[in-house]
Image 1 (cartoon, rainbow, N blue to C red):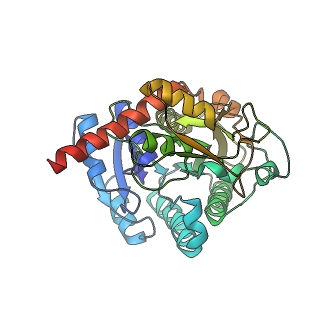
Image 2 (cartoon, rainbow, N blue to C red):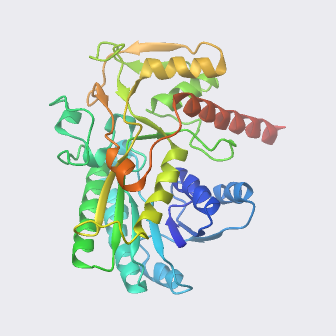
Length: 359
């Protein structure tokens, strides 16, 4: 297929592009580089061994999309071009409504005008780990219940502006599919994307502040922060620390490719042309378990400190991924050891590159 990947230079987008290219699809990348850099394209090209068709276009730019879509016939779009920080969305809600909702409207309209009838939507994208599965968080995710695992049929909950945009766009896509039989779409709700490409060339490791436990662990191991801060050891979990469903980004990338290929299968039908699917390992791991797994990979202890619970945190959240397993034939193949190993490899690669630049 000829596939346009909006947000293809970003974290999940870049890994998805690698998998799509490996499966023989013709990929065109659209990105405004607000959450990525053009350097990511060079890294991608080194991984796939050839040049990429990439364009600096904002999804809110209808004229830019129209010009791109008129170049050739495209079969499908993967939409990962969302602003995705839960904390930032609370500070800049209008920016999130504009980019995520208004941008998706422009993209859908441009797809219709160009006759592109297949869409895979990143429904919850790179949510803050405390907001696991924003678009489908249950009342339990507000601290009002105990239902686990979280299924696609759980009541929608919008705990911050970013989560609200994900839920609104997902519902909007469903409405458009119901009204237009020429459009079929799959919305993928994933929980806690982590890890990196095994090569270490692309990933999400950074030296900046983060509330993600795995990145905090990785940065502490790299000497970029003093210690890992663990918020609460008195939760009703296996060891008192919060439990989340961490899924390797390469498993997510494979799921996007599987979803595109399922949309091309005439036997895959939904009543309104729109499918919603959870992506997760279907089980959780606590912060302390994650810390110990990382220590085992690097073979040394990582300092940590227990703090009081954070407001808004919940004890545990993990996915029910059976629908994706049933409809896509997809399941997470990579475990916690793979996640820790590849995250550390990516961080080590960044440190080595930084040392080389200084020398």
